[in-house]
Length: 428
Ligand SMILES: [Zn+2]
Image (cartoon, rainbow, N blue to C red):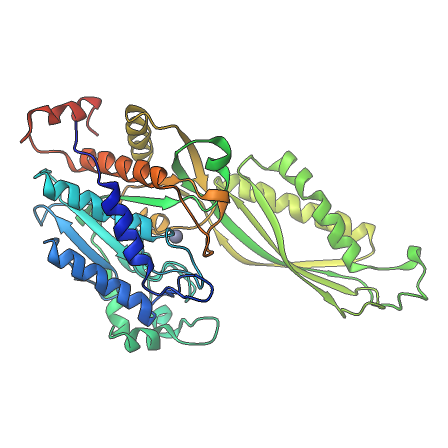
């Protein structure tokens, strides 16, 4: 049997971290990517890693690494992000970093040796303040000088200025690229941030894919007329077209999607926007997701057909612009079954699921085999101060990460006699 994780230590470390960037007024955490509070969290982590002998390094993008084991051979890297959204919760990202730290700590304190080194990463700016997943993209070699120099946040504040302000040289981010040969695998533990696991009663979600997403800006164009003098049958009401479309979304998914499909009209603008005028224009966003790119294509074509039929029916014109299309990412199938096998051996109730949100893992798949574990979010709540995950679920996720990471890193022949038992489940 492998030694167990120390839940009290995990808990205390997470609580300690949750004070950094904590706002007394709304009880939220404000560790916006590359802000002063975010950097305080990074230096707190560096300090912990240093004190415990895990050889911390910060790369040019602000990613923090720690390691245990022989340098030189490819590492089994675990982690997630340290930054938060404004008024975020204490588990999003932080859990994956603290769980990785716990794996290093357990191995160090029990003298566990592995063929491949174990590595922790706390990525930088994952929440997209500057419009990407900066840290993971830097590691995956997906940054361009143009992006580094020109990206800015919603207030127009530049990424390059934010970096300089916290002592990072902007173009050094391009040196953060990791050689694919230097990483054997990437494993991320994260809170689900949705209601699925709570509803099913399962403790563990084994993520098999990260949904792709497309975004359209749609315009339905009719005629703005006086709301009193225009008879109902002589109108070109852009809003009734939009309402019809919204009503058809569930049919479109039934006929052209999968149980993983999502279609959302999230932002709507009516013009001229006057209570006594028939809306002459409805401009809205349409965001579609699925974990299969072919299904995404099917969905988008069905939306286009529905919109043009509706436009004809309501005497409207219709145009759309595809603002973005990001294909789905598949997790490594062997890592998926590795997680499932260990979850089963450890007696954890688990299910396989897609991730509807983007995560560091999605960029790490560019350079290494990657996999992801979800644990339940109470009430499905995340990106909010009352984000919560029960401690027993935190323990289960961390324990699963430990077992999976040690199999990936290949335990060295036993120092303790009974350690081999854990390996009888098979090597990858
Ligand atoms: Zn996150």
